[in-house]
Amino acid sequence: MAKNCESCSAPLLSDFKGPSDRYCVYCTDEKGNLKPPQEVQQGIAKWVKSWQEGISDEQAITRAGYFMKAMPAWAEESVRQK
Image (tube, rainbow, N blue to C red):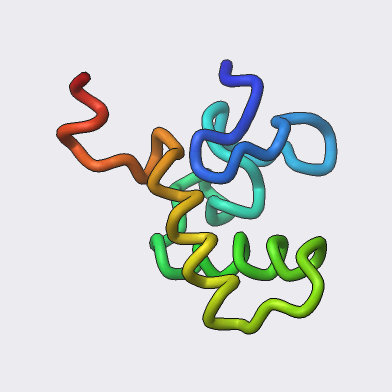
């Protein structure tokens, strides 16, 4: 079992633990399937805005996109093979 969500890096502990062993409750549906990338990106953007005061929604979405590219669930195929 992963220690952190492979989609957003949330710790896979109590409040964050969902039906998946790889992804948190916020990144999956009720069956443990990974949500669409746009939906996850919106959630990460909301989290970014919660601790980065004064940034716009557009900036938060952009930063969330950069963050997601570093996560195993969203890394490009060529990156995952290296």
